[in-house]
Figure 1 (cartoon, helix red, strand yellow):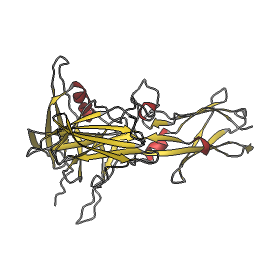
Figure 2: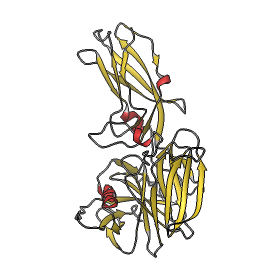
Figure 3: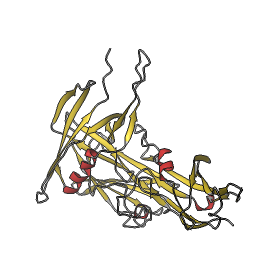
Figure 4: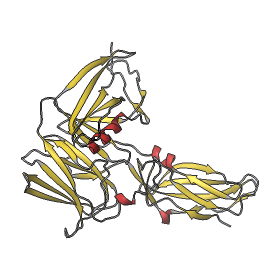
Amino acid sequence: MQPTVTARPADWAGTSGPILYKLTSTNYTEVGYRLEVEIWNNVAATKIADAVYYPDSGGDLVCDVSVFLKTSLVNNSDLTTSDVTYTDNNWVNYYIKYQEVWSAGSETQVNDSANDMFAVYGGLQIGSTNNLDAYVTAGTSKKFLTLMDRWRAVKNYPFTFSFINGERLTVVRKQAGSTLTTTNTTLTGTAVRRGKHKETGDADTLEIRLRDAALSADESVTMVCDIVEECNNTIVLQWKNYLGGDECFPFQINQEYTWNYSNKKAKRLTLFAEGLTLNQWEVIQGLNTIGEIYKINIVEMTTGLNRTSDKVGQSVNILNSDGTKTGVVVISQANNTQTKQIKHSAVVTIEYPELLLQ
């Protein structure tokens, strides 16, 4: 008989943690027994990967598909779009097919497409169940995919934020506590979305929330974004937090330039952020965390030589005022502060792409 599925992943889970299917089989004592699993993209109707799993001594199988889902996802989007919201590409709607196979026979393949799930390039921290329901289920406690309790943006520069699903995105522009304008954007379909706002007027704060289609009830918490004036040396960094959502933060007033000559020539820039809440300080420290290995693809224009290299660390972008991006690497360093302080300061050092020399 077919294996019994005893547990499936959460409807929405993060690929940084285990995404587990659990099954039990009565055929597990057969010689050469294995469970062959196919992971499928439910939207594109394409196969993501093949995997093979083996039972324990009692016939139980634990199938972790997170690594296959993660490698199918990317973490970039075009910010030059004029759309207020658009679908991110760091999530997938998936399902599995599975089949028991052994040396002398097999069972028929089972298509589990009726139990499709969703995965985001990200996840919760160790000790938490891999379930993003708090970021999905509509209600006044639903969270945006951010670690900050209050955002900060620069006038004339875009900033982005992420959320899962929603019916209406409401952005209220305020000046000195008085409402200037309210914009309601209709959302359709199931997706991880990026919201984008570029303040070019007189607003000093934004209030951002998700609402129902009738605009009669809130479907999320309300996030506040402080708008600060642009200065001559504004640098806005954008990066993915561990949830898989966008974080943006401006670094202004003071910066320090250095050059790195160790086996290459690359410009480094030390950035300073001041007047931070403790929460903002902690989130910015995520930039100083050694992260995954990712590739920077560089091909010399004159010789065609591929100088692609692996980098270890966060994949981070500088956001320009027109929405274009420059990829940089964060050079990890220690920061410290005192919790008794009302305001805090943070330091981040970034390295620009390597200069290609003759």
